[in-house]
Length: 136
Image 1 (spheres, rainbow, N blue to C red):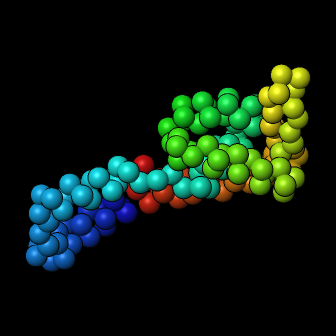
Image 2: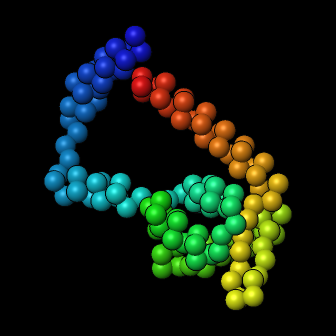
């Protein structure tokens, strides 16, 4: 039912709204370039960091795992990651320790686990709403 209404809306928009809109090939390429280069949102990176810190990790391990998730915001700016970790430590979300080799380890404290759980629940609700809107 909702899918039919969306299809009808699209048809009407194609006939009226978009009938006079023309995009040059260069304009289309620029739009695609911007979509493909859209930067990760800080909150998505923070969520990934917190998910990874459910188990103890070094900054180096985190970097590799984030890269594996396709997060590249810190590639040429590792300070971004360590600033985020420092803020998490200052707010009491993570704890840290140094080992005898000089490596620093990070992990979630109870406060961080509670915030992570809330963030994941919020994200799950958001995904469900989007799926419902898209009829999937």
